[in-house]
Image (tube, rainbow, N blue to C red):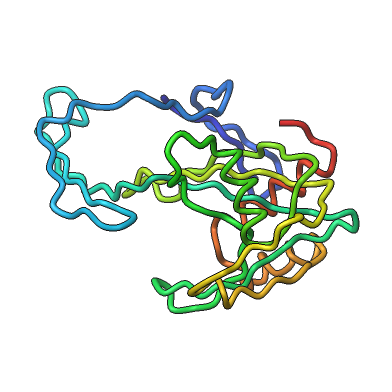
Length: 214
């Protein structure tokens, strides 16, 4: 498919390049290619590594693709009546840093709906219950090398949970703070917040809370 777009010329006149206009922008899912062989040389506690020999195009040789298999996750951005967002500061060893993030957790309970995972993580990580929990989006975090997706929800009408959860190991070091959403967006654009899920959740929540529907 060819693309058509406009760009400014030196005289300020917008010029349209030849091509076909794209009527809609929407990812096409479940359109896999022929996998000629597959192996799983590593199986870990959370992720596995799979090696596929896949034929991407008819008439072409198969190519190798290394895939990190991940169970997926759910995240929840909690916004209170003052338009403040609940953030957790958490150490992330792969990047050797402490990151400000929204509550999130793995889809590691068999049969549990992602929305219920988000509700559970909200209670377990920040002791909150949402009177309203709305789906914002599903995000493919690194589709070039992993099948991981994360389902992001917006939690509003917040109340303190009746039960306070005991946090162990690294969760015992969680630091919770509330930040006005506009200030949080400023932190994103200035490079102070880097977690991809949190960045996406912030912009999506701001868009939804500004009156835009899904």
